[in-house]
Structure formats: C-alpha cells, structure tokens
Length: 327
Image (tube, rainbow, N blue to C red; front, side):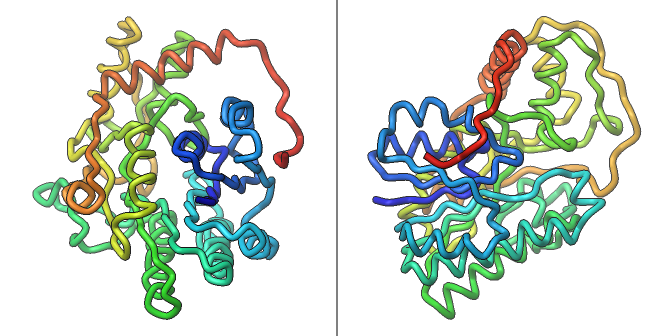
C-alpha cells in the first residue's frame, strides 16, 4: 500500500515511517525540515531503498495538493503542525496558516487523489480545561479549547467531519496525550520530558514552570505509532483518545527521571506560563474497542530511553544536516 506522512521527519512521524516500511508499505514523507530532521530518517533511508521517497516541501504551499494527487497515497497520515508554544501565543495567524489552511490543502489533495483515508494527529488541547472529576476525559467531553493551538486542531477535526459527509473522504482522528520519545528535541517550551532529559544528561539545573502540581498524561512514542498504524484501517469516522489514562504531575515526572539519571539536585521553579492547562489525562477505551489499541510502555521505561538518547546526542560529534530532503 502507498502511504504518505506529512511531518514524517519529526520524532513521531519518523517512527511511524519506520513502522510503515517494516510492514511492507511504500512511504512518501512530506516535511519542510523546519523542525524535523533527516537524521531521524537515516536508518529508514538506508533500509528502505525505493520504498521511501522524501519531499522537502512546506505544506502551506499550493504544490502540496499537487504532490498528493501525483503520488496518490491510499492512506495519508497528517502529522505536520506548528507546535511551538511561543509562536502559538505570539503569532496565532501563522499558526492558523500552518495548522488549518495547510491542512485544507492536504485534504483537498487527498480528495482529488482518491485517497481512502486521512489519519490526523489531534491534541488533548481540544478539550481545554476540565473539572478534575471528569478525568480521564472521554471523547464525549465538550471540546472547548483555551489555546489557539487547541482551536486549530479542533478546526481540522471539524473539517474532517465535513469532508467525510460532503466528499466521502474517510478519516480517523487521534487525540494525542503528551507524547514523548528519544527523538524529541526541546523546542519552544514543548516536550517537558525531552527538556528534563537534556538538562539531566548535561548536569544542568532543571526548571519547572509553576508549582509543578499540574498534571499530564505521558504516552510513549512507540505506543502512539502503533495507534496510527491501526487507524489506517480501523476507527473510520471516529475521534479516538490516545493516552494512558493516568495523571502524572510535573514534579513526579522530574522525580522519576532524576531517579533514573541518578541526580539528586531539586528542580527550581519559575512563574507558570500563560494558557497552560492545570490537569489532563485521556480515557482511551474507545481506541481499545475500535482500534484494538492499548499503551504498554511504563513511564520509567520510556523516560530511561529518552535519557539514553539525550546522553548519546551530547557525546556524538556534530554533523551537518543535508540540504535537501528529496531522494
């Protein structure tokens, strides 16, 4: 089967590309490499041969739809997005261009190409703040995003529903909890596990914004990739939560990672950031029922893998990034 992954050079997308190739699919990666890296695809490029094609392209451009029509993927995994918290607050128009307008170009391309299904990476931010008694949240919980990022993700879900009704373009939307993994790079205040790992690996102080009692649902990248692979053929027309269902405070996360790293220094605290949710966790019962999916990686196992990768990066010689993403 021919597949396409937008954002395929990112830390989630590149792991998905490896999974798809391992299952025998042909894969087109679309990525402008602004945040993704060809280094994430190094192993895939060596092993895949002609089964992998990489296109360096900004999905905001009209050429995006043309590329999709030309390559005609049966399943299109749409992961490309603007996720930098600083940009989200400071430049909401830019965020809308990347997360909403560009997504429409992707959908238009998929419609014209006769794509069977679009699998979309949504975010727990679509729910906004919730009553602690409602946690973990189910998909039936009202979607009331409080951030422009959450608004942009909800808008794409709404478009997916409309495209299914109007044009019979099937979709599966995965509402992701806080995904973490070895290839995640700290950027723009996102990726607290990666941020902590880089600091612990280098022996520098760890900063926690706010009192650290805010909670998140941390789910490992390999588990998330498994959900994407299953959604290629299951869960049509559904929005499915992908999380562990467990709340972990930022303070508890730091204690877990510090113990794995053998660090004893306490974290320092700075003022909380604007528009940050206080508590979050997702009920993934629907994914279990319709995708046959459940998470399996413990927080200790997952964070240990991230710490190992952070240490390896800090001891690796610097390498220049290839200037082209097409092969």
